[in-house]
Image 1 (cartoon, rainbow, N blue to C red):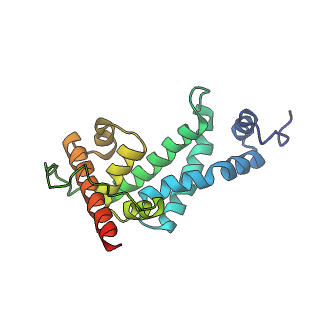
Image 2: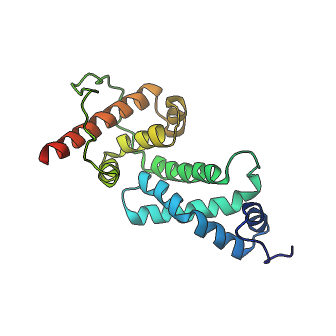
Length: 186
């Protein structure tokens, strides 16, 4: 297959085209994954504009490092990691967790038996997560959504594992309180 004539539906061919810096292949990869990666960016951003900037930065990184992607694992998973890391680099610049401290406040009276999710839609939950204080939101996303361990979160954010655990605990409490408030307003 000559440059510019890649089967842009087949992922292997799409990767081959991107590795050869074929613009059509890059555009096809962008169009295939942009909405999913934008969702990742939104989880770590305060605004749509910030998420759009992260999306662009992430794709620049993807295209510049596409040769490092091996065939083990999924392309989407590899890209997701790049987008999370791009967001984390931006967050580190702002040092959003500089005032975070390790606090043991797990027992603030939130009962795990409450069915606080009944009647609340996914969009409402996503809005609540995006409204979390930065430190809570970042650690919550990394742990619950991306599957990072507290050790990995601590290393990536330059905080202690205890602070990571505390931020996650406080994020869950914060979210449970908002869910309970929303349920009680109905």
